[in-house]
Length: 173
Picture (cartoon, one colour):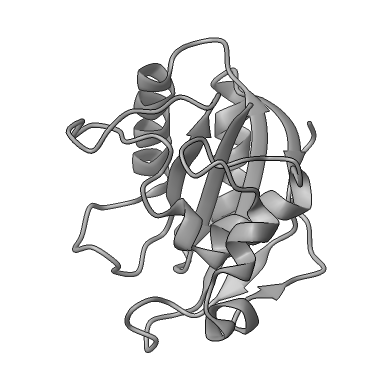
C-alpha cells in the first residue's frame, strides 16, 4: 500500500485550503491512483514559524500500478497545476503532496530525487495521526514500529497541538 500526505496552509485561485486538498485528490484519481481510504482533516500550527497560517493535512491510503518515480512526476505536475511555487523550506504553501511510504520500499539518503520512506514521517504528528486513523496496522518500513508507537514517542506538545476536524474531503472514490 501507498501512503500519501497532502497539506495546505494557503488559499489559491481554486478556493480555500480544503478546496486545494480536494482538487489535489481529484487530480490524483485522474492520474490513476486508486484511493482506498482518506482520513479526516487534521489541523496543526505551522512549523517552525507559528506566525504562518495553520496547516490542514489529510492522509491517503492507495494503490498505484506504476513505479514511485512516475507517481512523483504526477505529484509534481499536480502541485504546479494547483499553484505551488517552490519557496524556502517550511514556508507557507498552497499544496504539498508527500509520498510517505510506497509499498514498503526503502530508498536511501543518497537519492536526491526521492527518499523512501519519507525521512521525517516518524516525527510528524500530521502524518502519523492520519495513518493511525486509516491504516492502524501500518508499520514504518525501516523502524518496524506502528503509528501508535511512533505517536507515543512524540513530545507531549506535538501530541496535543493537532486537531482532528470532523470534516471529510468531498470526493467520490
